[in-house]
Length: 177
Image (cartoon, rainbow, N blue to C red; front, side, top):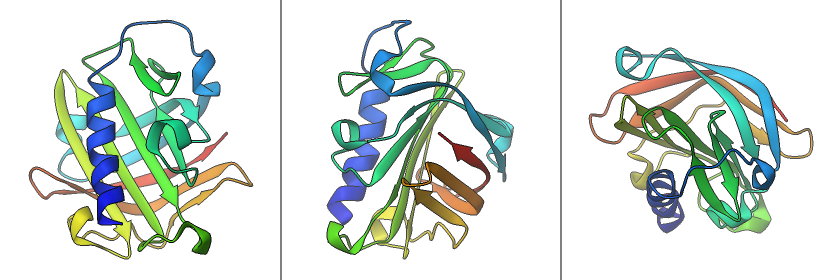
């Protein structure tokens, strides 16, 4: 699973910084306002206090390599042909949220990899349940869930760690798609 979480980290960062500009959301699977995630912690001075989900890739397989993930994006970023396509290269976010089943043969139950761009500055966050070294030993918490049947992702006092400075960001909100 360490490899999978590292792939999530690398994938989100790499895909966010590549691609070309487009107004077509046809590849993202859905487009609209799916909810807002409230943020708290020291990093909110830099990243803001909320993220509004405007696009979702509910399958995740082409983008992340696992069908257990859902990719949440801002309104100006979409997924086309398995690639991220941002229209705002200074302010964007990508959240890869995954909840694994026994059949997935994963070492963790849940994981988040998140990259936020604010004014061109990149902030990367991770967590896993149970906590692992590849997620900087940060547990997502019991309030985080990805229910692909109900098409709902819940962040209830979900904690992620900034991979560069070690600060904790807490996430709260429900995303329905």
